Every structure is written in C-alpha cells, then in structure tokens.
Amino acid sequence: MEILFVNPNSTESMTGKVGDTARLILPEGVKVRARSNPDGPASIQGAEDGEKAVPGMLEVIKKETAHGVDAVVIACFDDTGIAEARALCKVPVLGIGQAAYHASMLSGCTFTVVTTLSVSIPVLEQNIEQFGVYPYCRRIRASEVPVLELEQPGSNAEERISSEIATALREDHCDAIVLGCAGMTDLAHRLELEHGVPIIDGVASAAGLAYGLALQAR
Image (cartoon, rainbow, N blue to C red; front, side):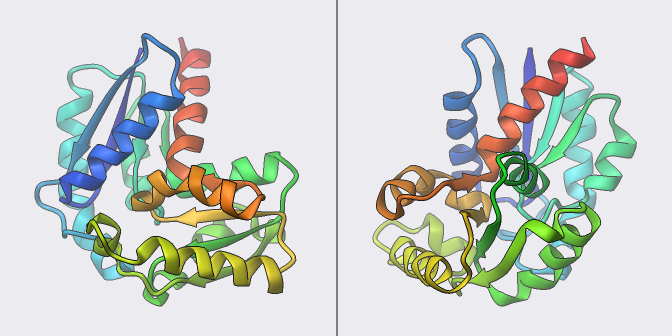
C-alpha cells in the first residue's frame, strides 16, 4: 500500500515533517510519498493563498496518482482544493482538517482549534459548518504565529502556541485541542505532555483514516 501526502504549498521542510509523522503512524510496509506543490505559495494563510495553490496542487496529484497510490491526503489544515481533488481521483482523498475534526468527534471530545493567523479563521469556520462538526467545536483561536515561523529553528512559535492552548483550556471548556496547521505536526506530542489533554494533529489523524479507507477499498 502507498499513500500520497500532498502539501499544497512549496515549503519542503513542512512536507518533510508531514512525511515523518505519517511514517511514524502507519504500519510497517505502508509506503509514504510526500510531495510539495512547487507552484504554490510558500505558505497558505487564508482563502487567497488557498486559491492560488489549487491549480499546482491538482497537477501534482494528477502526476503522482498516475503512478498508482491507494489514498491521497491533502496536508493543509484548510483542506485546500479537496472537492477538486476528489473529483480528480478514484481513490479516497482526505484533508487533514476534516480528519482532525472527525477524530475528535469520534472520540467524543469537544475541541478548540488553535491555528496560525486570524486570516485563516473564516475558511476554517466554513469547513467546520460544511463537515457537520460545528456542535463539537468550542472555538477557533489564532496564535498569530505565521506559518513559516514554524519552520524557523529558534523561533518562539511553540511557546506562543502553547500559551494559546492554555488560554483555550481555561476559557473554552473544551476536551481537546486541534492543531490548525500541518506545520505544527511535530509539536503535538510535546504539547500533549505539557497540557495533559488530547492534542489532535491532523496529519496523524489523516494518515490513520486514509489507511483504513484504503484497506476497505481493496
């Protein structure tokens, strides 16, 4: 089995982190193919960036699925271009945002999303409504950490995200925190140990769900 993880932006370090998480989650023998969108913006922050990313992302998906994959994961929390990707593919296509929401919901947890910038919130609100998980969502919070700061060694991005999580747990009365960016995937374990509540990472959630759906489709 092989699962394709497509980062709609062009930042290779983020794509590498996505692939690393997927390999940790998936059973031995499942191949992970992680690809960036060379024609995409360096980061996706809001609807305008997402729209710019879609054409190039679809080209990557078209090219990579021609070699045969069992599932596709869109590794952007905005679930960028998911409808177009599903129309293009004959295999299951998941977005990490949708996967994270449903992982929390299936666990019986209410959640607060902690994302990067405020400009991303309207897209996430629309997705949460569309995916039918709104009753489980307590709030969407912006840490005001730009996406690319997550890729900079020595930045204080993790501390700022952790601070926003602490505020969410204090004010929102949520059971879990959903990390609202693929670039946060490497923070999930540390943040869970720090705060003592489920920290749901969409990359890990999507990897597990994609594997299950691919098995059913065989």
